[in-house]
Amino acid sequence: MAKRGGMYPGMDIPEFYNLAEELFTPEEAAVYMAIPPGHSPPGPIAGNMGRKEEDVAKILEEMADKGLCTAGRMGDTTFYGAPPFVPGIFEFQFMRGTSTEKDIRIAKLIRSYKDAADKTRKKIKITFPVNRVIPVNTKIKADNKIHTYHQVKTYIEKYDPLAVSTCFCRHEAKLIDPGDDCGKPNEVCMQFGMGAQFVIDRKMGRKIDKEEALHILEITEEAGLVHAAMNRQEIDFLCNCCSCHCMILKSALSQPKPGLALNSGFMPEWDAELCTACGTCIERCPADALTSGVEDRPELNTDRCIGCAVCATGCPSEAIGLIERPGIPVPPVDQKALKEAIKSSRE
Ligand code: SF4
Ligand code: SF4
Image 1 (tube, rainbow, N blue to C red):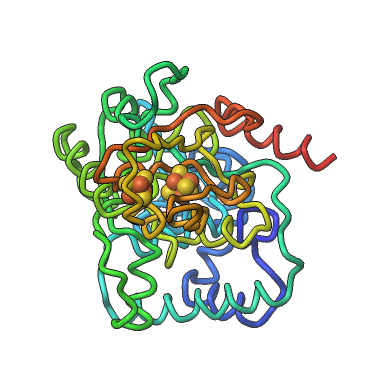
Image 2 (cartoon, rainbow, N blue to C red):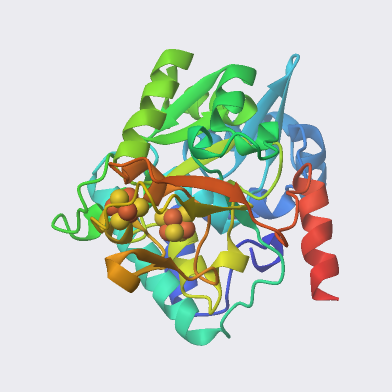
């Protein structure tokens, strides 16, 4: 799993083996290791193991149901993939929102693995944003250039099917400590197209229509949650994140300049005549990018601002709009382009 990449790759520490033993049988671990990069039908995976295709296909199906691999159908063939631990296996464990004893055990093992990994390794320096924020599009000022990838609504209109599942970060926290609940809506993690079909097929989420998807957007914006996705123009999931539990947000906000690690490409602009200095935007900002300045008016720290527009949606006086922020790279088109951008930023 060390070779699968992601935010928490496999590490040679006891906490990782404890977790892997709870998640995988030895046979499933061997199948996971035999899955080539990308997506593959069962035949080549069985070939890599010197085993019969039908036996390996059966194991792969069970693994997909357990969220240990991905599966997607093209025609009559199912293709399987071996995702990293994060994003991937970790999220799949909690998207159903169930609270069995096994779920609680897995949550505790994951927490202790992440804590141990965080202590062991050097702090990750983000050289190119892996994730991005998608702003609330109604708050972007009319004279700014808005691309389709800036608007969640365009993904809702474009993709079929759509699915929703439980927020894995908030659910993981509650499994470990039922009192650890920030009160934000939970069934708000959205998937699009192939990603949605996978969670529907494996009962990790439920199919929703476009109307319900738009309603989810409304409730998440009202609750001050941040829309976050992979930093690419084509997305297959959208998280609605709180800064208290979300791994993506917490990791970005711990950077010296979170506004460069995670951003929408926009920033807020105030209409001084409309602002009544009520302080709501300062309270709502998940990135601590706002402070009270002259005459109690909000003051922006652009190093911290991630361009989420949570300040704007909460302003009772409609005094905030979003404008384009220069210097934020355009999201790469797809996963391959994102990987290349990350690689070249490290060279
Ligand atoms: S929420 Fe609106 S009115 Fe209140 S301080 Fe912020 S910008 Fe001004
Ligand atoms: S000031 Fe805060 S709430 Fe407003 S866009 Fe920036 S990070 Fe989001």
